Structure formats: C-alpha cells, structure tokens
Length: 183
Image (tube, rainbow, N blue to C red; front, side, top):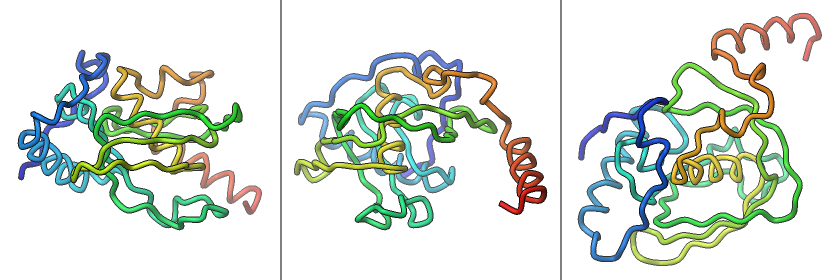
C-alpha cells in the first residue's frame, strides 16, 4: 500500500466526470482502494474520491465519526464505507446549509447547501450491493464525495462566496462569538 498524492483545486482531473468501473478491473481497483484507505488515514479526512488521487474512476470512501453523526440519527457513527459506481438520489426537496472542507482545497471551508436526506447505493469491494438512506452529516459527506466523481468541487455549489473562509479565520470568529455570546 502507498500514500497517494492528493490533487488540489485547479488540477484538471478534478473537473472531469469519472469513468464507471467494470468487474474486469478487479485487482487494480483493490490496489487503488487499499492506497486510498491509507491516504485518507494519513490526510485525516472523512472522505476521499478516486479523482482526488489522480484516478478518474467512480470510487469513493467515507466514514462518519460519532461526534459528527446527527443527534437523531439511528446510527451514531458510520464505519469506513467503500462504494464503487455509487449513485445518489434525494429523498424529498429539503436542503440545509453546512460547513464543508475538502482535502483538495486545503485550508478553506465554505457554507454549502445539500439535500437533507438522500438514498445511495453502490457496490462494495466484495461485490455486494450497499443501499442506505442517510441524513445530516452522513448525507453531506456522501453527496460531497459523489460530486467529485462528476467534476464538482464544493465552491461550485455555494450560493454565497462570502461564506468561503480560511479555517483559522473561521475558528477565530467562532471562538470570539462564543466568548461574546456564551454559545
């Protein structure tokens, strides 16, 4: 296994639609996924898509740590999930704004609208089909990673670019606000 270089915003691979994976690609996909798991762990993120490691194929991985799970979610966390050729569909029309960062856009985060609840499906590494409904952060991270497969970066989804901030400035603002309001 190897830690792969992460493509950053501006690299053309991040703007392309990734290709579907066929069963004939089995061993090379296993190697890629192993390397992606190692890369995600090293980078400290919660999700990664193959285009982010310079591979234009439809593979994503993500997990939801307990502290990021929605308070009313059935699952308090989601273990590392790998999806090959994932598909996402909204459940309803409700959207919500939430802060997102991205390993391909280091040091920044933005306020991004996403569907509140989604249904997703894809093939697991062992060939079984995974189908789930998700809401909250779980839904957000899946939508974010699938966007990478379609050449979309989160700033392209933002409605107001004044809500794009450097992480350290945003943290300072939140800390000052807490100090002033007690919240």
